[in-house]
Length: 424
View (cartoon, rainbow, N blue to C red):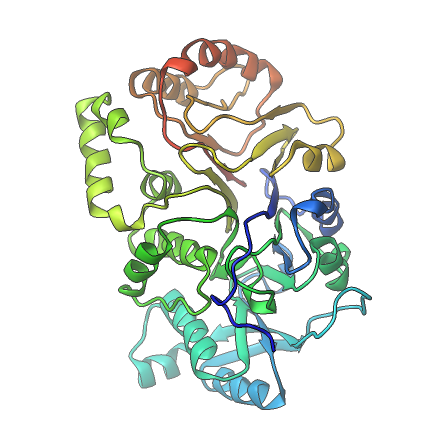
């Protein structure tokens, strides 16, 4: 008998990878992310692999794409009755897959492109917030309809996951037939849960998707807190809670991704004491107000979202993560080998420690005013965050900043390393 979530514990492993084209072009084929994650085969144990692709449905870019697992026909019929009541279903079909010798016991896997019927929703539910209604739909179907599980619900993006090694999962879903501007991937080595299709990474809600390596020690506090805001953590896994925390802080609380990083991987109090008065006041406010959303323990996270990608390490960098870039493409992975497998002529690779000052500048013929201001603030606060924006980061720009960082970084204790990449 298959043991349920929470009834088994296996020491942590996992591999994560992410690729984004900062111009927003659909230049990255699904085969590329498969090849990257395949290099880290030994970090997984075959109990789960998955991918998230952004920009993969241009023909239905304005519709919500629901990817759904079904145990049986009855679950599908009940779910589709709900869809017919509240949505205009533009297209519905099985997700194309191919038989794979190492992927078995597959559920029914369907895909729906839908648009909410606002008049009916407002008449029957009094609901006018579109994203809230979509999120409520996901939670309702996943908890109220036996044998149905929505595992992807964003626009112009999709999650593909299964029990198996990630490279096999990618071939099973025929990802080489998809092109996008951003991909993330995960090879699973479960910490506290058995292998189940819905429990594999990425976890997603609306356009946010999260892949995670580690085992957070704050799970129970984080779970109890996020459930107070209407989220249902039904899988007893920390990655699910992290996904909902990011969704809450962005969609409901209205924070940008840099503030989200400051909340879930907050600076140490000794750092805050060295900040300028206004920065320290804000940091204390965030730490005190959202203390129960602080994520503790070892982790590395890649969060995909519409037109962007955020990567975040724990404050002590207890899980590996490296990043690199070539022209307009940024690569992130648990191991450097995964990046070099798909981009042998990578221009720069770095792995900033969790407690070191780190900056990746944006250059257009020299450091921008924005970059110069940031470096000045970095010297005075010791904070460690990096934001990638549209526009390439050249090796020349890195040379201009790296000497100062190397000279001063070792004496400036910092918070978690984070990267935020935006596509144009």
